[in-house]
Amino acid sequence: MEWSVQQIARIAGTTSRTLRHYDDIGLLKPSRTGGNGYRFYDQASLVRLQRILLLRDLGLGLPAIAGVLGHEPDAEKALGRHLDWLRQEQDRLDRQIASVRQTIDTLKAGGEIMAEKMFDGFDHTQYRDEVEERWGGDSYAAGDAWWRRMSPAGKDAWKLRSRQLGSDWTAAAESGIPADSAEAQELARRHVEWLTGIPGTPASASVAGGNGDVKGYVTGLGEMYVTDPRFAANYGGAAGASFVRDALRIYADRHLQDRRRRDRD
Image (cartoon, rainbow, N blue to C red):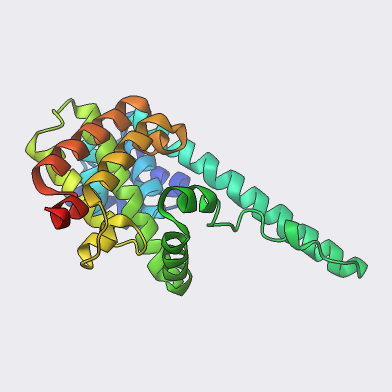
């Protein structure tokens, strides 16, 4: 079965001009072009368009979308991961909706607001106990202050960067490249660079000239990605998380050091 440009534009809520642009830049080629120049799209094209629109909703630009699609040729696996993320977002939004609805109902009834229930789904401090246990209260306070000062646009950009990094890791793991390959090590470098941008972590302390054990921090996180399903899910599961751990460990051995041990020496 095939659909014309006009049909696809109507079904997908986009425009014929957009679809023609996607064709021109090689992002979404029609499955067939008729003798009259009309473009037609088959089922595989529709699946690819769905992935494009999902990634666009995440804020990715067209070059980045092309990169993701190129690294993740298996549409079923990629959509499965995206579905997992959408379900997480759905759960968070459902909790926000219920929280706001409860506040409205309480205000209408003139009742007393339950502060403990007002911010369900809004909490970015859910890992506070873990952070403080692993790296201390100062680390959590620094990271929390940094996040609260950030503008909404800045937060969205940071989340997008995080999702893109996780997507690139997953695609690399599924491609079968070794953890010590140039591509995997470039991802490890990006990962460490991403970590150094978070105030309060040992990685940021080392960059700032402190005494943080950045090597131990990076390799420890790699192990946590494997053992904690919440983190492993960001990399496509246990196998992907193991790939990330191995690549980070190799990168750390090659490029990082325990600053505390260096200072003792």
